[in-house]
Image (cartoon, rainbow, N blue to C red; front, side):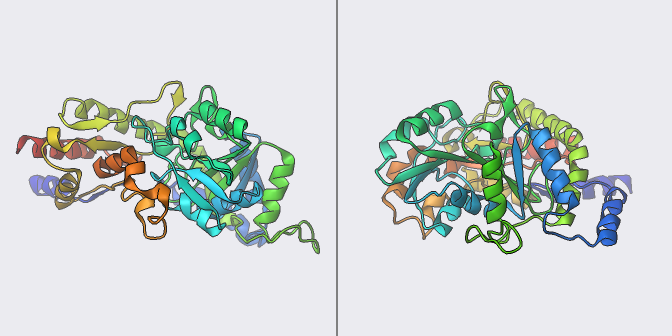
Length: 382
């Protein structure tokens, strides 16, 4: 019977991620309070409390909560009054560029650097045109962009910098919260993120007036009972999301410690496998271990990324190819001059080689070793 149970466990599916959730009994008192006061949304007490606690936790001046990260991105561009063209990366989740489309802004895709997969500052200046008004970089996998270099370029050309920091909750770089860089930073609290409120997101800003404008725009533009300041939308976080966030924040450190142990195990076990590249740990950065991408060199490893992806799936190990295809390859963007593959050689290569391995706080080390063993076995069979 024991052997049968162990065999069943070895065949259990392992997914790329799984949401971290507190004990239900810890969340129930918050729900009971919501039921008693009947405040479900519209800047309720939990919403206000979470904004303040997140600002302190992240080490930033102001946080404005949203119902999801995509609406935060769309609104951030409105807040900064961005128009014309925006320089951005093709190597991200589609929401990054879709936020530009929804604001009638043309994306200018620029290639990435090969070490971390972030927007390459050395290639930004050549892409700037008279219509360029901003730069929209992404801290890919939670690894910080070369923010000081990007800011220098922005200052020279009078451009705004809005960071898609969806992967970056809790990360510190050069001794400060990563969301202190740029004019605005956008966070996602989706179920797949290291800190989740089921769905959710936020804009981080640096002054009180900008915070007021953000709050107007996420609430139809209202600045009072009868005063509408701008054509805003409805993207407020509700009280149940905010309440969950308050509980989740208490367990963040514990969850990150578990994720760190998993990432360190992957690094140790994968380092000797020929044809597998692991992204280095960025210097002077406190990571949140949000993702564990590896890159497959077909010639050295023996099979392609897609072949490995399918073989892992056959063993009930479900990885994801973050980020494939490139955003620039989707039909609505592929006709742009900047989207041509010959303009994006590094991004094209990384998209063909990347596979993100399972990583979540409740993933056991035994399962991590099971995943690694499969990767080793496929290499040995060649």
